[in-house]
Image 1: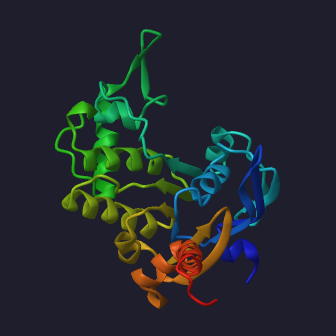
Image 2: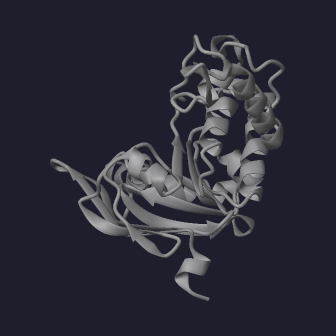
Length: 265
C-alpha cells in the first residue's frame, strides 16, 4: 500500500526556533484517514506549535508536510484550509452577538438576487444550518439564538460544526473539553466520534487524559519540542501516559532531591 493510501498526513523533521528557544526539534507526525490522534504533553512541549504548523498559522524553519501523499507548503491558514485542514482554537473565535446560523456561515453567507440586488438568504441559511447540526448530532433548539446565550458545550459544538462544515479531511481541536461540565464533555466527544466516522482525520490536543481513552485510536506524546512516545490506545493506560508526559522531569527532580539528602548515587 502506498503512502498516499495509508496516510492522510505525514509531517517529517519539523523544527521551529524562536530566538534562543527551540520550540520544535525534528518532530514527526502521521495521521490516517478517519483516525483520532491524541497529541499530549506538558505545557511547553510543543504540541500547539506543531498543530499550528499543520494549520498554516506557523511556518516551520525546517521539515516537510504531505497531505494524501502530496507535498504541501503552508504560509497561512487560508492555504491550509484550501488543502482541507481546519483547526478549532481554544478561544473558539465565535461572534457572541450573532446567531447560530450566522456563526456557521460567517464570511460565506448564501445570497439571492431580487431585481438585480443581492440580499442575504436567511431562510436558506437557517435551513442549511439545521441540516448541518442534525447531521452532526448537535442539539441546538433554535438556529436564531445568539451565541452569547448558549452554554459552553453548545458554543464548542458550534465552533467544531463550523470547521466541519468546510468539509475538511483533517480537523485539529485544541482543548475542546476544557472547562466544560460533564454532560457537555460527553456531547463534544460524541461530536468527535461523529466527525471521525465520516472519514475526517482528527488531532485532539487535551490535558483531560480520560478523554483520550474515549475517542482516540492512538496517542503521541511530546516533551520539550520532541517526540518521546506513541501508543495505540488499547495498549496503554492513564498511568503510563502520565509517566510519559512528566517522567523525565519527575526522574530528574527525584535525582536532585536524592543528592541533596545525601543519598548514594
